[in-house]
Amino acid sequence: MNLGLAGRVAVVVASSKGLGRAAALELVAEGVRVVICARGEDELESARAEIEAAGGDVRAVRVDTANADDLERLVATAESEFGPVDILVTNGGGPTPGTFDEVGEDDWEAAVEGTLNSVVRLSRRVLPGMRKRGWGRMVHITSIAVKQPVDGLILSNTVRAGVTGFARTLANEVAADGITVNCVMPGFTWTDRVDELADKQAEARDATREQMIEGWENSIPARRLGEPRELAALIAFLASDRAGYITAQSVPVDGGWIRGLL
Image (cartoon, rainbow, N blue to C red; front, side, top):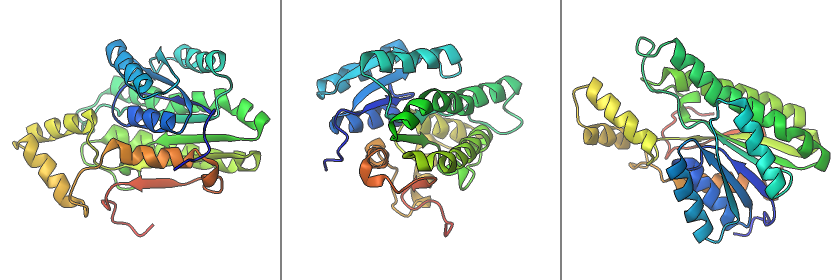
């Protein structure tokens, strides 16, 4: 599908692997010029090479999302290389898993800085330009945990709910300016994050990694874990003109895992 995004400029956060990488690949397939970022240099270069090999116009910036100066440099790079940022896709990467007793003060601070404050800072940085041009798209990758908390993920359950509250409120404030703000809520999806969670929960429950994954699959009506590209397709759509009347929403991509009516 041609979503009419050719020539747009996007910043995709935490995009060296997993959901962020898939989102960047989906956007460049639509002709978007993309700036990707991550902390790990080797994985970042691997992602840049893959996206470029797919025909994408891409730049890569090494960034720590908890560092305000790094985030400023990220947006400044996008503007100098491609022009004003039209599309912002944030992705916290996932706070440290664990129960309340297992995570400490430093873990809480890192989760807030890397997952919540980074979204606020990036939004503040790109919003004036979007308002000036009368067009903008913000898509925040959160989690099914904001709708139905996941055991053993107290940091993610808490901080991603904060991102959702921020996004929902900002959406109301900027809708009349031609800017949409939405969240996408991935369910159990084949990423390194899910592998990490499976290993941790298997250890805590004296089970195997395979048993944990099988249990998740059995809890999902689709009876399988998701693929990153399935979430990425939704992100690209929400970034398009076709989705111009969709804002202030949190959309699950979870195979039916969330049991609520709304």
